[in-house]
Image 1 (cartoon, rainbow, N blue to C red):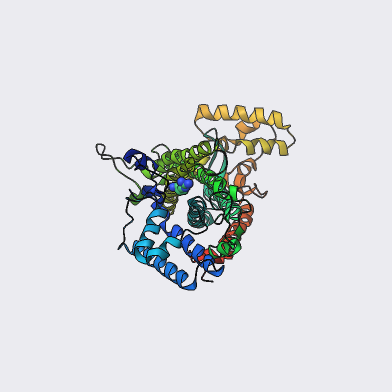
Image 2: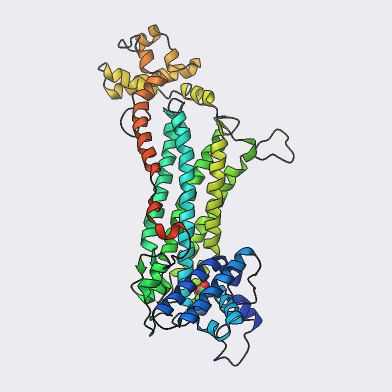
Amino acid sequence: MAQLWGGRFTKETDQLVYNFNASISFDKKFYKQDMEGSIAHVKMLGKQGILTGQEVEGLVGALKGILHEVEEGTLSISHEYEDIHSFVEAELIRRLGDTGKKLHTGRSRNDQVALDMRMFTRQELLETDGLLKELLHVLLAIMEQNLDTYMPGFTHLQKAQPVTLAHHLGAYFEMFKRDRQRMESIYHRMNYCPLGSGALAGTTYPLDRQYTAELTGFYGPTLNSMDGVSDRDYLIEFLSALSTVMMHLSRFSEEIIIWNSNEYQFVEIDDAYSTGSSIMPQKKNPDIAELVRGKTGRVYGAMVSLLTTMKGIPLAYNKDMQEDKEFAFDAMDTVKGCLALFTGMLSTMKFQKGNMESSAKNGFTNATDAADYLVNHGVPFRDAHGIVGQMVLCCIEKGIAIDELPLEELKDISPVFQEDFYDAVSMETCVRKRLTIGAPGQEAMKQVLALEKEYLGSDWKAGLKEWEVGLLRDV
Ligand code: ARG
């Protein structure tokens, strides 16, 4: 047992209590942020004359050394310590003696952990955004090649109207684009530095919080010290955004599972992204898509867990807040893994265009267009709807498509039918004529593709000079 706070205690902590309380097994995940935050803190203490130049040099050098050794694997983070903060401080004292004991001047673990978690989350958010962008690039490439790949669009999982593969995938492009926009807005809201909030009421040292914030890549300091140590809104927002990413990935996975089924055969998942059965030799299963769908629950779970943890906590810091970490880390890793695998699966997947097209042709997806043809020839829409309904019934009995009914039979149904009917309800016409922006018609889709391309040509992260390098600005 190694802890920072033994002074006022007369008894050793019970081992079970110690174990229950300790967080090192999971907060070691942000060892890098912890040490970067400490380096910034020390530099600021030096600038303010609270530490001497020599002390700053010693502390910064030792912190960089510890960080380097941990990264290299030559120093392992010992679980003997209560948390990562205690481990680093003990290591500093071991190396520097009394100077090491000065690290924690003007700081509490409450503002320290608030800073570490925020820096870690910020890094995760940027990585997740990058993975979303890669997925968007893959989607755009497939869309560009499939403006003329016809397929049925569905409502109620029943064939509804013809669309194209480009159009269908374009819906997901929009979803993942919004997911990135959520990342961006969360970033801007969360990017304020809690360090200097102290335990809850600031400190009596003349800290320069603006300077620490600059060193750690934040826009500025948080404006209320009690909020600074007890705010986890940013993490809840991030988990909520991650849940939405998973919801989108899960819907997409569900479609891929359906499309990959024997009945549909719209796609073939690459062998590298499929798995077999231990008993049925013929099987090639869409396990990756199923796992992405399945893992959605644990990400939602992390969000609900943190919301529940936070809801009864009086200001300011309470130990409940230590529970913000494990599920959140799991959710962050899960989403990054799912995004990377899903993108790989999508980019290697084969689209069975012929099957998609014949499915669209054989499912009366042009029935609305047949009714529109009648309307264009003066028949009121409600009557046209009824007439085409009868035609569909007749076609079902005969086992044919609407445009396979001979003209004489069509004329028996309604005298307005002419030879041009066949062209009016062809798959090509049905799609081509859907020209309003957002619709599947090729001309409309080309305009949208140009916009999506332009969107992918720039990146909101490009303006974030501080964090591109992922480390402290050396001011
Ligand atoms: N492990 C703690 C956490 O994650 C660090 C802060 C401890 N602060 C305290 N007052 N006990 O929240």
